[in-house]
Image: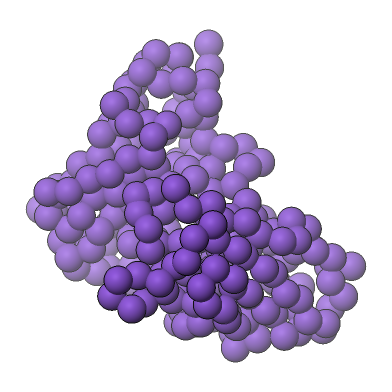
Amino acid sequence: DVVMTQSPLSLSVTLGQPASISCRSSQGLVHSDGNTYLNWFQQRPGQSPRRLIYKVSNRDSGVPDRFSGSGSGTDFTLKISRVEAEDVGVYYCMQGTHWPPWTFGQGTKVEIK
Amino acid sequence: EVQLVESGGGLVQPGGSLRLSCAASGFTFSTYWMHWVRQAPGKGLVWVSHINSDGSSTSYADSVKGRFTISRDNAKNTVYLQMNSLRVEDTAVYYCTRSIDCWGQGTLVTVSS
């Protein structure tokens, strides 16, 4: 199984400042079809998860452009350019290249300082 | 608007059974893979099972293999998760997801004596 490792596990950020979350996979995530199936999810307190980013860097509809994804191979990053109060929650990376199983990172909790 | 509404959760004793349902609307259900993902209280997201669009292919996490069965009824736009031989460690909110992009609100399963 592919192990997804996120860091940090907790992040305290000042409003308006940037934030960055790292996700590393135990093996490369390039699929035989040439795509890299690395997603990012946001889970606000008390809510269901919401996908923010798919295939490394593509934002889902309605996701603010302050969220961006990047990376390749085994190293991926989610960046929030300017953190807002509504960004508080837990962020998960997930790989869908080598399945089953689909595997999630442990989650990174983002709070406001 | 895409909607996924889970039902069927509740309190069950160890060794018991439950069947979860997920009613889908707002999209062409028969063309999408469907998944179940669970989240134990205060913990992260864990993929449980998937079923392809016509129901001919399924997969399971090792932790539930042989005990859980996923199925779907494309005429009713509904996916199911039959859970047998439930264990205390199966206690979680169970989310239905469309191709792991859109998520339902979840249904809580509590396994306790």
